[in-house]
Image 1: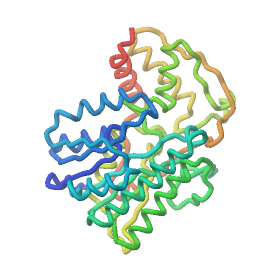
Image 2: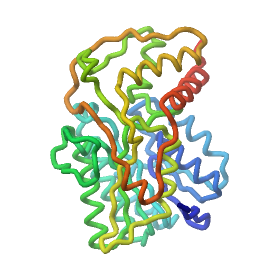
Image 3: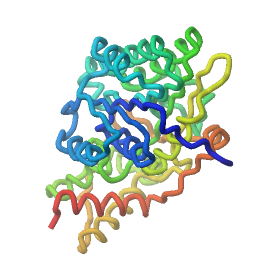
Image 4: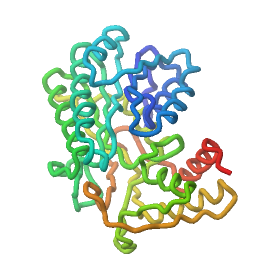
Length: 341
């Protein structure tokens, strides 16, 4: 299968450009000579210095423009589209996290609903050629059937975060129907890697270990019925997005939703064992987590496992990175970045 190369004459707007996926995608596009406008509000949901470190690596590119702003601010978004006239928009700005949404619901409505509405409106009035936006595997809720397929029923979310992401899909579909905006939604499955999000389990486990604290594992210590996750390495995710950017939907309602995951679920405990081995290799000493087992948290689901058949059919997407390779890259980066002794 051959893939259409990214058009260097186009202007690409990436919201959430200082975020984990946004940074790696921006870097990939910039390396290919594309013009990238990066937008991020630099909020303190997690360590801002990590976001600043990502941005520092993007600043040397002459074809990169960074704007510190919030997608929930309609006037700023409108002005940005009028000034920069992006032809391709990748909306990765969102308030992430399932558990955080239980304590801080307002943030999710502001960013994920109002902010996304502002992006849709701007795309509507400025003839955007393709809107790619972040959805989430959390829309599948407590579905028992695995692997999750895009045609599955997704009207029973178990967190507000999931509700906002399902709402994004509905909103995008409506705008595609009414205004013929080509839009593609991506249901991400547990993305990990270097320069990742500290609120993700693998990063949090590593932080706890080096702080001399036990890690919390929310599976009741049930190893037979352990949690399953479709851990997907960041480089694989970016390749999938890059290919989809050049393939806007052309149906009568030009809107598509794809799972983007590893299609190879791992038990959480296997993932943890692999992380211990990776950190042992990175530090040159044996690393073993002190584990505290607790009940599964509200909003969490026992298994997330993606069918990626549709994405493979569309753009030949097939993840290449094993958890051994991916976690070793994370561990090596972590030890160097935090100067672990």
